[in-house]
Image (tube, rainbow, N blue to C red; front, top):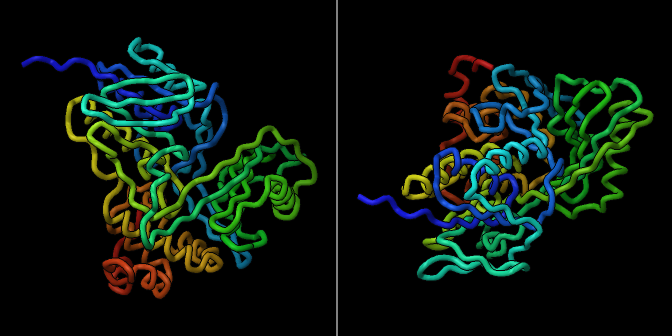
Length: 404
């Protein structure tokens, strides 16, 4: 039996998904030549990734901050969780990029082409052709991890699909006096003016005087950057109690939240990864853990000539995400209290595993039992229904407390 010749794999997009896949291929011992193409010219602290520590990843050790507590705040009160077993972690993009790139630099069969924009991707009988603004590349197969520039995201979503987006602008600030609780992250503070979508402030306190504060909106129109900065300033003075602050850096982004079905295979030789594969959790916008799981599974398949994975998530999670997103789109102004109820009435461990895409059926029963029945049953109605909420609540309340 002869070993196959090394292939040339073109990875289009060198962000989190593209670099995670390339690094995973090298960990799997792949001898294939990897060509990573990205329009950026440098790597740095361009974003923040957060997730609950429910399973190991190649980058978990890089976490700069860990919070054993997290909370949701509305005009009516707050709900707080604490879990030492599943803390909420913060990774700086610069650390993740540096770690992945350092591993790839040790492998001579890896080529990183920065400052190059992908214009076209085509498959033919013997391979793939990629046209960029710097020339033409040929390979044996391609992995599309282009995120917003992906052909997958330019296709029609399909009848009945919910298409929302999460827009955010965040400032890392140093304030004049200690006002932050560095043990507890604020996932959502809804005490801000609500417009045509859902609006909240997200806060990662790094110390009593330093934090990332993000103005976030789901659905509706995205306000101008100046208005978002003003919203952060209002929150700092009215709710944090800061008087003066210095801005260290700013980050912004747009995260798709959609019930569309993504193609993981656009042909025999074109695969998808990251946002282009639907790795963003539709109901929450979290993507880090799903990207890591899919990168590892895809790398293992490619390195060992096995069929690539056909799904990113369990069908049960997909069904629940569709229901959550439909209910959010139908009545965004009801969601502040629904989110607070979810945190208040769900054990911390079950909540963390559900948000990190690692929940068990029992965890999901507890989540469903914490939510109002009518709006979610209505959201489930267009599709085959999930088990009745009344039955789930009865089962969930009979179980023993969940360790956190």
